[in-house]
Structure formats: C-alpha cells, structure tokens
Length: 582
Ligand SMILES: [Zn+2]
Image (cartoon, rainbow, N blue to C red; front, side, top):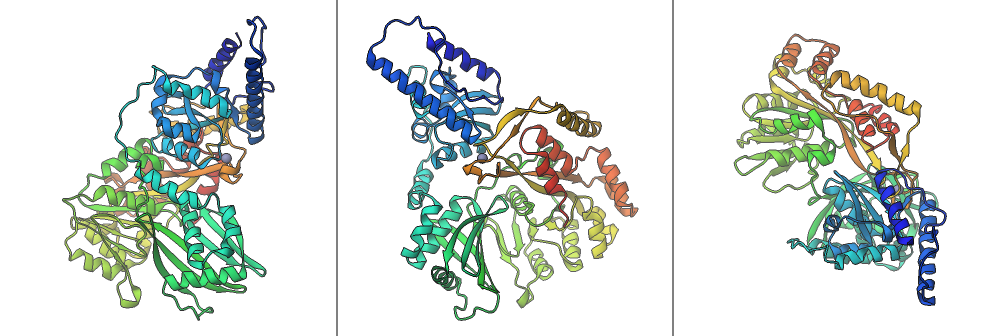
C-alpha cells in the first residue's frame, strides 16, 4: 500500500529528529501498483492530494523550511493534548513529534498570526519548536485524530478571555501594510491608536517617526533592532505628530525645541503607557515613542536564558536579607527586564519594597514606585535617603551614577536592606573597580556587595525558517576547542558538540533576518568571602577574575558558546554582543 510506504518514510523522518527533511520532488510516488481497482472519484481525489503535497513541498523549498507529509505520519496521541483542538484546527498547527523539550510541529502557513501565536505559547511553556510545512489537506486529515477514541479530552480550566480580546484588535489591522494605505483616510486619533496597536502586536518596544526630505519613515524597534514599517506623507505625519503632542500635553506650537511627555492608551481595559521624546531635526521633528506595557509578562530566569550555576546562584540569592545586587551591561542588554524580574521575586506580602526610577518603566503590583525629578532636587541620592526613612526591606534604584548614590546604596545594603541597582560596565568584575573609582572605599564595597550579574541579549534562531544542518568538520573542531576550555572550568558540564546545528535562511516571519526573539547570555559573580577579601586587599581585576573563575564563574562569552552548542543562537550573534563596549 502506498500508505505504508509513506508511514515508513514518516517514521524514518522522525527517527532523524532535528534533521532537515529534504523536500521531496514528488511527495508520494507510489512504489508498487498492486492496489485494488479504485473508483474514478477516488483516483481524482488522490491525484488532487498528491498535487497539494507537491505544492506544499515546493513552498517549503522556497521558504527554506522542512516539509512533512503529515497526513501519512504516525502521531503520538499524547501530543494532541499540547494544543487545544479548536485552536489547533483554526491555526492549522499540529505537534507530531516530541523528544524531551524538543517538539516538531506541522503548520499549513508559517506566517499565519494564529499559528505564530500557538508557537509562541508553546515556547513560553519551555518547548524548543521545530516548524515543518505541511499541506492544509494533510493537516486536516491528521486532525481527524481529534475525533478518534485515542483522543480523550482532558478538561482543563483556562480563560480564553485574553485570546478573544487580542483577536478583537488583531482584526482591526490585518497587517501593518494595509494600515499604510488606510492612514490618510483615518482621523489622527485613530491613526495613532492603530499604530500603537500595531507596535504592541509586533512586540515592538519603540516607535520611531523620522522625517526625511520627501516624507517620513516609521520604524519599530523589535527585539532590539529597528525595522522599517512604512512611509507616511508629510501632511498625514503633521496630523499624527500634533495628535501625539496633544495627548502628551506638549506645546503644539513649539517645533524647534526638544520636548518630553507621556500618555497612555487602553487596549481592552489594559493600560499601556507611552513615553514620548521629540527632537527638532533638519526635516522636522523626530518622535520616539517607547511602549511601557505595564502588564507585560515578566519572564522567568530560565526563559530569560539563565542556566546551570548562574541560575542556581540567582535563585539562591533570592533568600538573602541584606546586600547589594548589581546588574551591569550597556543600554539594550536587558538589564531592566532582569531588574524587574528580581524585584518581583523579592517582593512579597511580608516585604516592603520601594523603587526609585527614571523613568518608571513598568508598574508592578504591591510595590511603591517613585519617579526621580532632578529639577525638584529629587535625584537618586536624595530620593534614596527619603526612601530609607520609609523602612523598606527591598529597595531598587534605577542606576548608580555618582558617589552620593553609591554611598547611600552601600549603607542601605549594610544596614539590613536588599538593594538592587544597575551599573554601566562591560563585565561583572568591572563593577568592583567602577565603584571604587566612583569613590566608594573598598571597606564599604566588600561587605555591601552580594552578587553582580552582567548580561547581553542574543537573538534566537527564527522558529519559522530554521532547520538543522550538518556542521563542517572545521566548525565542529572550533566549537570543540571552545567547549574543552569551558569544561576545564566546569568539569561537571554535560555537553557534547552535536553533528547538526540550526541554520536559518530568513523568511517573512523574521523579516528575512533568520532571528526571532532574544535570550540573555549572562555571567553571575558571587561576591563570596574570598572575593571580599581580595576587594579589601585592593587586588587587581585580573586577580579578581582568577578567583571567580576558580569557583566556576562562566563568562558571558562562554555562556553564549553553550547556547550556540545548544542550537539556540549563532556564534556570530554571540560575537556581536560580547564585543560591545559600554
Ligand atoms: Zn524566519
């Protein structure tokens, strides 16, 4: 039977988990023609199906994706529980193979927002998703399993409210491209709202309006990089600009001075704040609007990329009752996310938590957040002194920039407070000489410090277009050398160089970059007694690093190499971010 052949092929493909499935030129070539006679209708249906599979295989080739003939692939019924049947049928996505946390899914359209949403949800549950293209018919056939006895619906209570809400506004803008033509026909209030919604939907952190000679370019910052969205004619832009200024209570008649403002908008009862900065330029005012989504999901340390010793120490650190925890890195390194993550973990009902921020990026429940106002003398140092009179247990200050702040912060850490803050340094170790250079004496630095975390963000391979590929002997050797060096420091590390690693040619989903989403590469310095002693002895950075390395501290670069070997990102990406200077 044709079906058997296909089944075998299917199992073989599955056996080679993670490997690219080469799209066959003719997906279902019958091997032997010993079938009983079939009716002309059945024959026609079969021919149609074969044509569809062929088209799907062709499309997979074009998109640089793996193809799967899902209709003939055996599927473990347990996997059917991974996605709600109604959602799976609507989004045309089906998990068909699972090994540990690695899951392969078949999709009919890798660009379908519904499909992408399901993939994103699976990823949030901690799965590594490998996306394979299938024909619609194949998927529908496979989904008949949902009606079979093998599938027993597990009753799960889940709120679909959020889903529905999101759908309501997603319908508003089918895609951003259609918005471009719609803009001039909308009121400026509607236009601004839809652009904001578009930014939220794409997960953008900032909206940039950049006037040029002829027109205005609008770009979104997504995953840390700017993406051109569309161009707006100058008349439409003037209306949009005035609308934004009006909402921020800025002066409409002033166009030759920088202005800052803030406003918020509601998306189905969810409040999103925007911080707006306007700057006069040669061709008009440029606008940068940062989205401060107060209800944004705060990721777990694991989701953020903390693993091994770094993860273990970070978790342990949450039990301390006093001490200073610093997060270092340049702008865009994800420090703020980690800071808020820590803040959320530290704060609980029996703890009083106060923050001093510039500006307040996310509103957190149960935490008193205050905003500095330098014009009124409420700067980090003054604000911190005021906060300490409020008898807090946990204090977060946005950044340590001067001696005054550093001293007050160190004193707070020494007098029974947990103090969280950030510092602009390249590495974790560098935070120590930085504090000393600011003027904080070693006898305060040493006892105050508890942990220093340094981090960068690397982009992850796009789940829609990445596929595994055999790596060259040279590449394998290169990675092996790096891994051997890491293993010298971390003898307990269980990691081998695989034969295959992902590669992503780029697709519309990832704006042809091959990357989608980001993960942190981190180094966590435990300021233990040995390090404290070295600080008091005014030891050099080299000595400090040596001591930390002896205790097994991994550098950001090494953490990045591990993530490359784990197939999360590329070596080029790790080099890109770890070469950044502050
Ligand atoms: Zn892609």
